[in-house]
Length: 77
Image 1 (cartoon, rainbow, N blue to C red):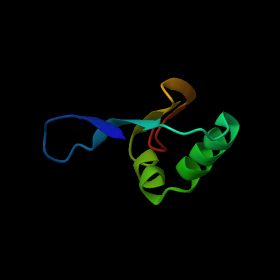
Image 2: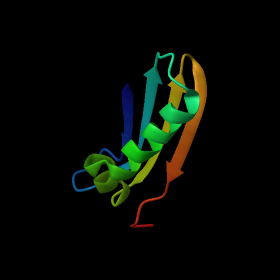
Image 3: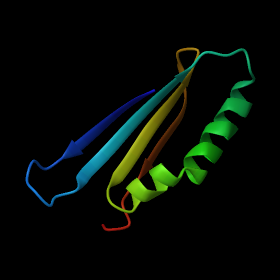
């Protein structure tokens, strides 16, 4: 997993955007992995906290193939 954050380099300014990328190697059915990734993103306290402050986007790859891409705007915008 990798995470990248973009912010304004001034005191008091929050992150503008956080991007994550998850790479999974598995023989599991892609539909099950996609379902698990969606549930994990929806239920994650960290992701939900970040979504209230900035844009959050992510991509999930299974065996090198993109299976899920998500984008959200912050509750502040």
